[in-house]
Image 1 (tube, helix red, strand yellow):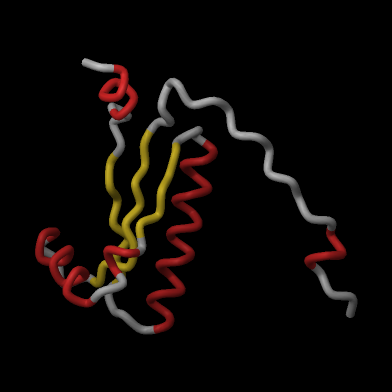
Image 2: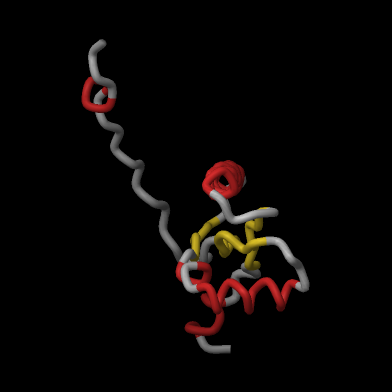
Length: 105
C-alpha cells in the first residue's frame, strides 16, 4: 500500500467501558476503570484515545448498547493500539512542583 495506508495499520481495537447502571457511582467506577486501562496500556507502550463523544448523546449510547447486545450502560469508548511505527518518541511530560498541587494544612 501507500505510505499513508501503511501508517494507518496499527491493529487498534475499540474497547467500551460499561456499567450496570447510570448513576453518579456508576460514572465514578467507569472513570476508575478508564484510569486503570490508560495506565495499563501506557505501561505496555500502547497508544490510547478515549472517545467520550460517542457516549454523550443518549441515542448514540443506546445504539452502542444495542450493537453490543447488552443492557449495560456504555460510558466511554477507548481506542487502544500500537503507536505508528513512524511516530517519534513523545517528550517527557513536565511535572509540577509538589507545592503547586498540595495545599498546606
